[in-house]
Image (cartoon, rainbow, N blue to C red; front, side, top):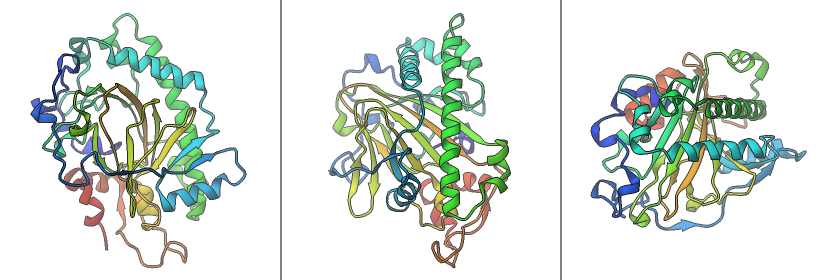
Length: 343
């Protein structure tokens, strides 16, 4: 998701895209039943998961690049995000999603308005069926929408989210520098990375309520992220699955203390298709799950052009275009977007 939300934010609040009052639903509504007819369904999952890498390992950079090529996703230990901060984010998110429905609706995202606030996934308009999910997106300052939820008690939530985003931003840029070096891109020559200006950065708090019929529901439908990198903090209950060629859907089993890192479309294009933009989904479960996704994308005017070399190929797989242009194509063509820009 990430930068993609901007391209179709006017469509987010069609009436059928407002979250259910999940606490009052005891059977799965027809609107949320996903047919078991293709690889979109929650069945047939393989068990071998993506690699676990310790950032403190002297060989971490090589292992990260290897994971980018073979999986497009990896789990990361030694990342430096304090355990207490991760616990605090979970506590604040639980407090948010525990609010009465009427209170959460006060922060509902409005058509054509801010991308921040409460609602269903931005990818909802691309699917006939609805997802078993409610979310809260934060772009920029969290204060305005938090005041709507907690008029007299919003500061703790805001301080926690600002601190969390700051820590994730530093980690993300550390990983970007490692990957850029493998592409022979000098990070010091990338103005937006050096100066942190014009970036598209979003934090999505996800709640997957306990589902009465999880085998026929979908938490988040399959998609790739319109980002450079996405970092995910999972809860203890598994639900994230990634698609790997030759293996099918693979469960990303949460590892205590680890975070999940996945590559988005922009690194796939920059690497001339060598790095995988991982297709992923979240299945529904019988217990409530929370997860937190941090999306990082370059400025809209940044030109994305495949790196050509003996390692990444001498013929460009994709045409050169700006971030803004690709976001527009993704908003129109969704999962066919990469095919649209292929040479």
